[in-house]
Length: 275
Image 1: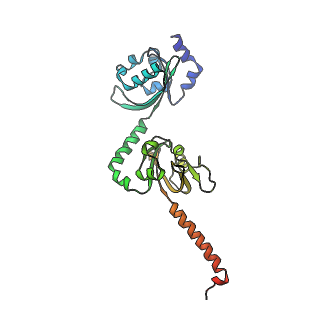
Image 2: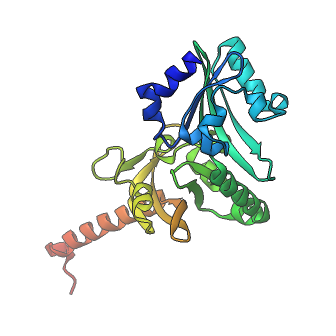
Image 3: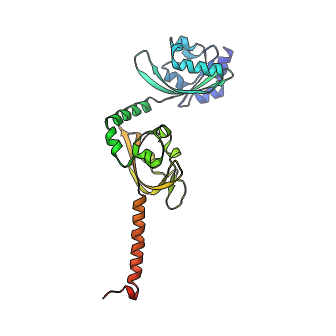
């Protein structure tokens, strides 16, 4: 109990109590040594009820679950483990959590994030993708759907072909990380003023034709991008990005500009004057 009290009274524990993510330390005998307020809320418990008790006492039958197996592996093999876990509450409700586990001298440190809303969004998008698969497959423009954090949750075949990535390589990845965008004039990587960043910040649709995307093979190509926010009761839940390769359009525009320049020059010379 002295060790438990040490964690409860520590400055670190008091700091972590205000974190949005869950932090907990499980001892080698499966007792809760430390939990922050978020963990208690995630498990619909109180810190007082959790501390000092074992996971099996708090959640009977948990030793038969995949999450228990992963914690046990982390504890015994002293290796980092991570997983997405669906937790079933006694009232029948279910919630999803992203868990990261790492060994510490006292046992296992578990970092947890509630990803239930993300899972719901992915499920809806997957269902919509199944229903409209043929439609999406036939669309020549690239389609990327992100969650409210800018992580990709869906993309169509045209996007894969234009970018050179498979679905598995892009899903759940931050769009700004895996798909660098280059400014047309400055030739530099676009970061804070990138269209999707502005949409996430303003909740307004943005269209842009002055940037390049960089493919997986590091080739760049000009894109026309339109990004629309997905709103639910005024709350931003994600974005839909539609983009197309405008290499040919850029070439045509360049040719038009050169033609007009040549024609204008010719009309200003004696040989270019017609009667």
